[in-house]
Image (cartoon, rainbow, N blue to C red; front, side, top):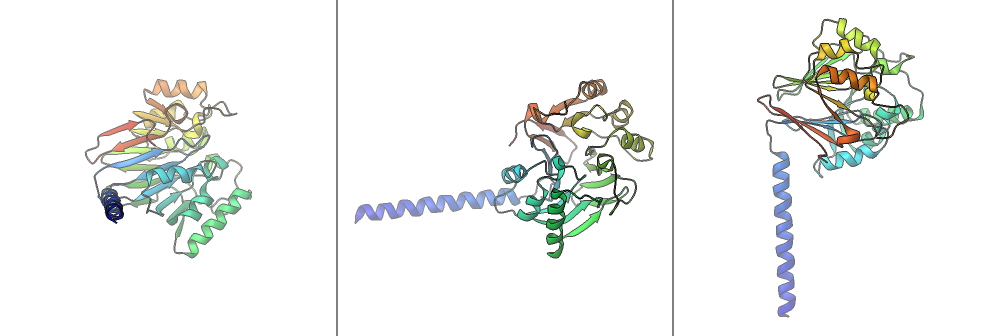
Length: 295
């Protein structure tokens, strides 16, 4: 009888310790701080970027080629969190949209930003169906074009720099060139997300009367030789550049030409194929630093 009593006491103590740990973790995860975090997921040949603002607003830019993004999100989001504030699809290539249907099915998304271009692939059908389901449950869909701006209420601002025209239900021959280009500003620092734009859109951005100067550049199109032109990099003048790319891919990304131009720009280069998941921190005083293999 005494042994049974001891076992019961031990079980109760273990349960109390577990509850205390869960409460402590919950309090930490809910506690506001002054830091912006941006994860560049090592997602294979594709893009997926997760942003957490100081007030815990969450933004997902692209999803990579597969449902692997859900595993990544599970490692950086609290276990009890099943919602994402803002989802941005830069364009409809599979290496950016592939995991979106699963993300939309798994998480409650409040705002969905995309261009609305015509896409007739099976993955686009799945995406549009999942978007429709979210809209029926209160989500808002925004068709993106230059000049739109969002204030997240904690010092973080998002600005759409491209596309320059409205593309809802427009059939395009080069989806890459219609990629949503987004600048994020916080504490005097800027991060430029460029999707898969090439030289054509880079030139438009340089010639437009908009701010391109950014501290961090998400390198366009995984380091394609047709992107990251000298004039574009000069306009941005980044301190750091991040390439999202698979270690083995059939495109030869990142190309020698792009790497040489990035080296000439003076930017410190990070690559998901070599550095794994990359975490960018920016605090309220504008201090920034990057870490490798952070998931």
